[in-house]
Image (tube, rainbow, N blue to C red; front, side):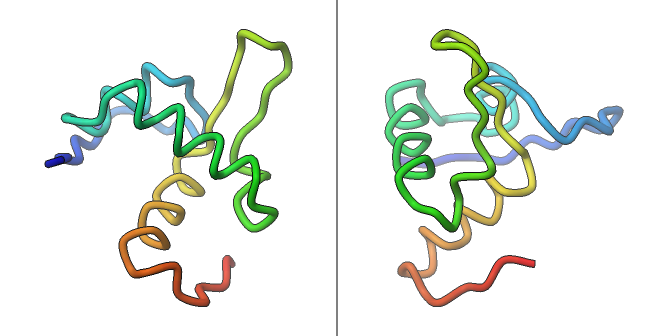
Amino acid sequence: MKIKYSPVSDSDAEWGNKAAILSRYDGLNKYTLNRWLCEMRDNKLWRDGVLNPTHKLVFINFEVFDDFLYWKTHGYSKLRRK
């Protein structure tokens, strides 16, 4: 899978929904995003980056998601979050 990051130049938002993540990462599909969000929820290191106020509404912290992708890319190394 080839994913290309597309930065949003005029956005100061820290949180977004699935559509915002999919628009930032061109090539990422909804199925893979859902699996990764489940993985983030199950891991206490990344759990605070995904909020579910209701069963249909989800908010994802962009910085935490970027760190999570770095963590996945580098073989689940012992990365300490800031």
